[in-house]
Each structure stands twice: as C-alpha cells, then as structure tokens.
Image 1 (cartoon, rainbow, N blue to C red):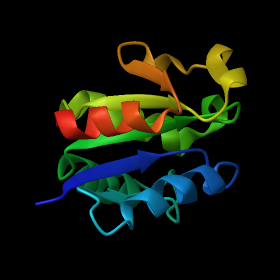
Image 2 (tube, rainbow, N blue to C red):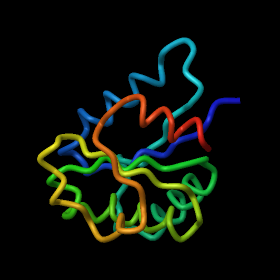
Image 3 (tube, rainbow, N blue to C red):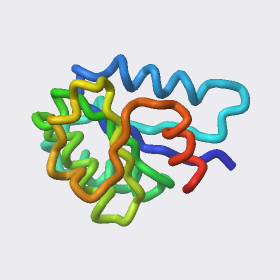
Image 4 (spheres, rainbow, N blue to C red):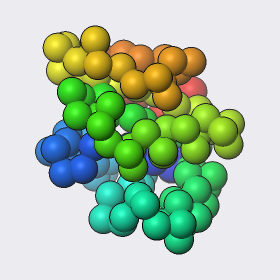
Length: 126
C-alpha cells in the first residue's frame, strides 16, 4: 500500500513546487500518494476539521519551505496540526536561499534542502 503524504505549502506562491512534488508521485513505481487542502479557506473551522482529518490519515507531512511560508496561515496551521497529532514532519527548503526563513512551527522537525534521495528516505522511513 502506498504511503500517504500530506503536502503543506504557501498558497498560491508555492503551487509550482507542490506540482513538482506531486509529479513525482505519478511515476509508475511510486510508493506514495500526496494530499493537500490548498483550495480551502484556512480561517474556517470546517476547513480545519477536514484538514485535521486528512492529516491524521496520512503517514507523514512534507512542508515545502519558501520565503512565503512564514506568512502562510494555512501552511503554518497544517504543520502545527501534524506536530500536535504526532504525524512525522519533514521540512523541505524549496531553494537554498530559504534557510533563514524557517517558521517556528518547524523548530523540532528535520529540515533538508530539496534533494530527492533525502525526501524518498523520509517517505520510506514511515
């Protein structure tokens, strides 16, 4: 059974990075599936309830970290939710320039540069 990975990212600024990651899951032999709730409104309680349910049903969460992450209420809430629920979280810097833009919500999580082998290692460890 494929691993279920929730993707957290700043909307709409980081849609292209999400698309790159989702594209990898479409490979024929991919052992994982990705989920995100990017079309929802992070301020509605119904969105938070639905999102929490999705996150709890996943094996892990990958947070795509950019200069915009610190200002993305939805992405920050998703990371906090995963941490609260005990879901493993991996922070992935979408560019090397983002190392100084780490949100506090990721302070206890592993953070890596976008290196596919390391992303795959996280997924395979779940």
